[in-house]
Image (cartoon, rainbow, N blue to C red; front, side, top):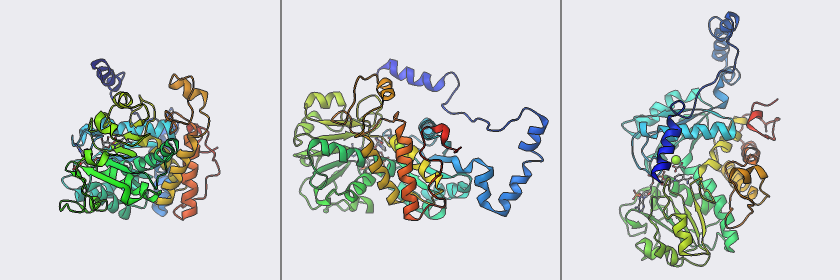
Length: 423
Ligand SMILES: NC(=O)C1=CN([C@@H]2O[C@H](COP(=O)(O)OP(=O)(O)OC[C@H]3O[C@@H](n4cnc5c(N)ncnc54)[C@H](OP(=O)(O)O)[C@@H]3O)[C@@H](O)[C@H]2O)C=CC1
Ligand SMILES: CC(=O)C(=O)O
Ligand SMILES: [Mg+2]
């Protein structure tokens, strides 16, 4: 970013008041009578009802439309471990996206925990407060055990966005991009740079969608993850291949796909030139991709290029997933976000990209035209149809797979966030 853009970003966060979120009141408070309902003595009545039946918390408090965005700051975007407080702008940012795109209220919680177990215990003790938990920017491998333990201990959806949100959006974009390239997922040779939270989940979901394990190379800081290595954790070991390739230079030769979930500027133009025809490059590291789109497009004119950023075409970013996945899950009061719900979200996203783009989206991106193809493999976050398409698909999958505690919402389809509480 230029110095001017960096200053603009700081000004945006600082002015007119610090931060990006505020809390609003939903009930009248103008009179003494109002206060007697909102607080003492009236507030005692819902307390008594919830004590009789915990389900009443959904009726008398904001729990059912409230998601906690929780981080320990150990893997903030691609910036690394900057600690919990430095993660707050990102967590507030996720809250902005929850509210703006799905009408979901959120609180951000930055936890200064001395160990994964301390983090788990802290979150588990306060989990009853919310309708769902979105774990964010927690590094691998700790994130896997943290999510597993919290799923087990909480009876609300617990979802590590960097794993599953990213994997859902990546899989949808990948299916479309390969289709445009004239290639099939089950034949594509895929190189994944990064072997952390996002990378492991993306590769697992791509395999579930049809990618062949023998066509995958995953790399971490030490190079290709192969079966001769004795320094692999159990999550990386699942992707260890029998190969003599050791470096990105070796693995990238003839590859159909490069998926970057690692750090900035790690794929060179020379390496991109070694890929097969019509290469698909998802350089998803934020804020700076593994290869800048301008550099990639200059290196070859047949590349199908995506990044995690909002300021270039083809944004492959979990913002296309988590707001709507939680919307659908909350609206059927799902106890979990399971594989069926994730796959339903993949297909809803993939299919929406093939429909004509509304004029307001073109206006928002200052474009004359946008249609399914190399420069448009996924809907943009500003496409209001995401709210209904993805949420409805997720809600239906929750009902069909038996994790919903309420039927498919009668107030769907959702045309806007103004409709999320029904009529
Ligand atoms: N576009 C999107 O929607 C999303 C993008 N991301 C991006 O993905 C990246 C990883 O995030 P996340 O998985 O949460 O973080 P993790 O800390 O869990 O994983 C980071 C991984 O990147 C690897 N890595 C870092 N530097 C290098 C390098 N120089 N060469 C090879 N591998 C490297 C690490 O290797 P090692 O294991 O050896 O340490 C590790 O496997 C970030 O840049 C983040 O912004 C994440 C989520 C969503
Ligand atoms: C987008 C996101 O969640 C990340 O880069 O970590
Ligand atoms: Mg993240």
